Length: 262
Image (tube, rainbow, N blue to C red; front, side):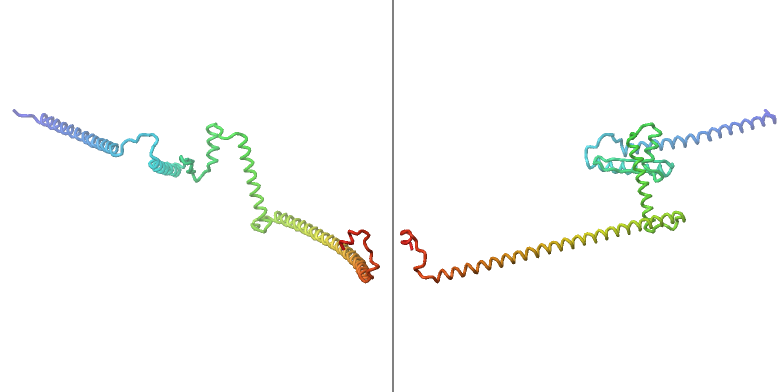
């Protein structure tokens, strides 16, 4: 039986189509095979990691040493995560941790301050972290700090420090302030000197009065002493005269008992 030429062409076409179909099936099965194996390997690794580490029950650690070690590790980890999210995501992070002992650990993004984050939290959440009294106190503290800073700058200027950047008007005002201060200091110095002179004069007058009183008392003492010395001489002369008188002229006692005693 002879096959015609068109039939031969049809057979060739059928064979070619069947070959393409089988090749397509093979190509479709290869990615699925690799994907399945990759998924299975991931599951195996996950199971292995679960078996190696195991689950940790979240409850209070009774052992104080283990609790302290865990706290240090978890604290360092959360601090590291806070720093990473600050750098990677340009986020503002503030973290405060208090240990059971009361020790504080904190972290704040370098681009902000804790007070700014708290203010932003208060505005965003609508929760008041402090009342109006504390806000007024905070404003008063800020005002006093600003006044203190300005006074420190003014004091440095009065000492002649940091005046290179001052304009002419401020330099003239500074000169007037220094001259007024110098005038007041000199006036006060003169008052102190006058007061010292007056005190010296008062002390000299008091000294003169005391010297006069001392001299008067010394003269009085000498007069009294001379008077006492004079009377003492007359008494001594009288005693000598009585001792030289005869016995008959002596006063004799009238009572016999006194005479016996003699």
